[in-house]
Amino acid sequence: MTTSPPSPRIASVAELGERLAVLRLCEAPALDAMRRSLDRHGQLTPIVAFAERDQLETLDGLKRLRAARALGWPTVAVTIADVADGIEAKVRLAELHQHRGLTELEQGWLIRSLYRDDKLTQPEIARRLDRHKSWVCRRLVLVEALDVAVQADVRLGLLAPRAAIALAALPRGNQVPAAAVVIRRGLTVAQTARLVAEVLEQPEDARAGWLAQRLEATPAAPTLRPTRMPRGEADGMVTDIATLVRVSARLQARLLGTPLGALGAPAAEVVLDRLGALAPALTALARTIATVLGTEPAA
Image (cartoon, rainbow, N blue to C red; front, side):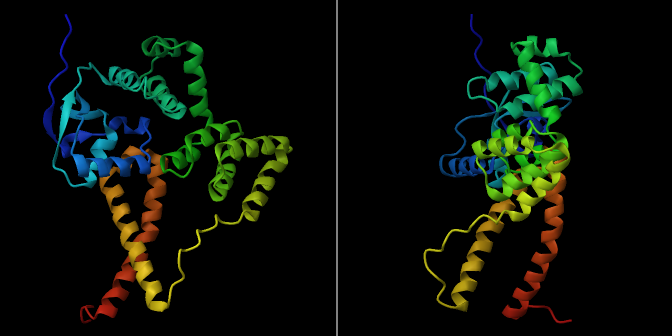
C-alpha cells in the first residue's frame, strides 16, 4: 500500500529558515529566472520543509523561497517532510537531488557537515547516502583542501564550481592568488586547469611571485563596445542613470531574497565589506542628486 504525499499548506515566508542553505549554491542567473517564473506563473511546486525545534527549515526549494522574498510575497505553499532530525534532513536533501545532481562542491559541503557537525564516521555517511566509502572520502578531501576564501568566491558567483575544484590541486597558499587570476581574466574551466598545471611546474618558492606577475600583467576583462556612442553629456548621464537603476534594483532584490548568513561566514564577510564601501558612495550620490533637484533640506 503506497502512502500519499502530504498535502501542501500555506506558510509565512518569514517562518521558513535556511539553515541548510550553506550546503547549496544559489547562482544569480537561476535565481533571476525563478523570480521571473514566479512573477509570471505563480508558484507551481511547493517548497519542501521540515520541522526542527519549533522552526520550519527549508529542505528543497531554496530558489523559490528567495525569489518569493524578493517579490515581497508574504506566504508560499509548503510541503512538510517527515524527517526525524537534521542528519536525516541532510540525507533527504541528497536523495531529492539524486537525479538533478548536486555539484561536487555541494556534495562535499554536505558530507563535511555530516562528518564535522554531526560527528558521523565516513563509513556511516557512505551507508546513509548509499555511496562507496571512497566516494565520500574524495569529496571530503576536496572541500577540506580548498581554501575557504576560494569557496567564498564560488558562493558569490565569482568563480565556477568546477574551476574551484581545479584550483584544489594547488597548495592552499597558492589557491587564493590563482583564483584572483582566474576571476580577473575570466578563465574557463579548461583554462583554469592549464593555469594550475603551469603553477605546479614552477619551483615551490617561485609560485607566489609567478602568480603575482600573472595577475599584474593581466588586463581587466574588455568591456563590450556600445551599440552607439553617447551623443553628448546628457546622453551619457541618462545611460548611467539607467544602469544604476537596473543594478540597484537587482542588488536590492538579492539582499532581500538571500539572508547573508546563508552564504557562509567567509562570503558574508566579503559582501558586508563591499556594502560598507558602497554605502558612503550612495549617500554622497544621494546628496548630489538632492542638490541638483533642489530638494536638499536647508542647513
